[in-house]
Length: 90
Figure: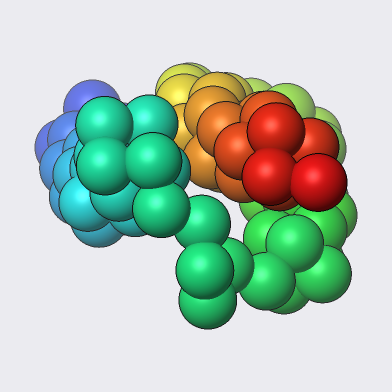
């Protein structure tokens, strides 16, 4: 496991990565807008984050594990919201 200060940098980066998704979550869940959201892109991002999560587990990096689990949760919130809105609009 990396030193605490190194993991701290990873945790700060992870928090910023999660914060970056808040406007998209708000747009989908609060404003009920889904136009312009590409589920294919979100699918690829989900795969990439899942692989980063596996990597973090393999190298025993708590910051990578936490950041990727939380970011995947944010991504799933957007995907579920978009799918819900699109099924409603049909």
